[in-house]
Image 1: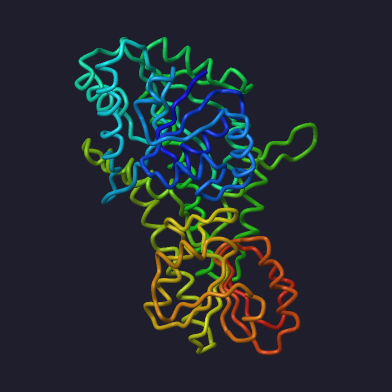
Image 2: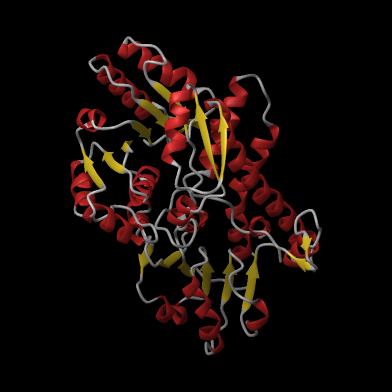
Length: 443
């Protein structure tokens, strides 16, 4: 099938490359000429595990190309995936790019007799596709739904695992407003052997938001309970998690073997959720509900707990007997295996410390470049050799659970001066840290 993907951001590029790897002919459209040139040379402009090798393969096989010419791409496509950004603006998603693209597609259709299925891949609130997008395209094209197709196909990609998530999904949600689009989307994913859910567009939109809001709720609820455990004292919240997860409703016993699903990982307390999805999506669904006259109490609580979690790390430092302003900060991205620092709890803690005159040496395997753009402060320095900086700093904070930071335990075993270790991600085994003061969330 011939496909146009509009938007070479995280979702658009990963989706386009993966679809091309399944044999589809993909043209990726982006307004940024420098990014188009990079993609056509097989070089991605974003970091994602395995993306570069896969991009090079599909470019060499002539299954993937990029262009700034939207009309040329549309002329050679059966189906269009819109994957432009929908950033948060005062708690509401900004649909500016979505409106612009819909306008351009409508103008193309006015001069074309071909049937084109337009499918929204970006995360948009329920009723966006079948109302706003449809109205713009109908107005600009002077055609009606049926002359063109319309649908919504949400993504469920985890940064760092996006290629595997796309190639081996739990399910594929296919939202459609006409049966020709339903059939084209079914054909698009014919090579995927997983459950396919066929629903209308606004249901598909709601599935994405409900999925992320419920996961965010689980994180905030466990963070609130872990904070309570710490305040009560003499409770390790990991022991609480063991007790909870032993319940068969979370972890069933199958053939006399206890099965612990991946959802249990969302129980682990920490400095809060971040990234490009959870904060933005919970804010957007809250704003939508409030605009319709609903209180959205749970959504507000999820966000309130999350906003306060970075403060916990600061209190741990300020309540420590170590009167030091010297900090080694390990990990800046919102999660490992990505350079994304959007809504990163590490950056929030970093800014809190800088506002209180701490001097910080920071390290991250791949997110330093993005951090330098975001945080500019003379008391913030960066290092490529974090191990050598341990002796020079009395406080060590693990902000992101990169695997390499597990080496900290053995290094501390040889360190003579006492350190305060704030492990925001429960990465280390506290029983192996004897001499130094170890502190974490939920303990």
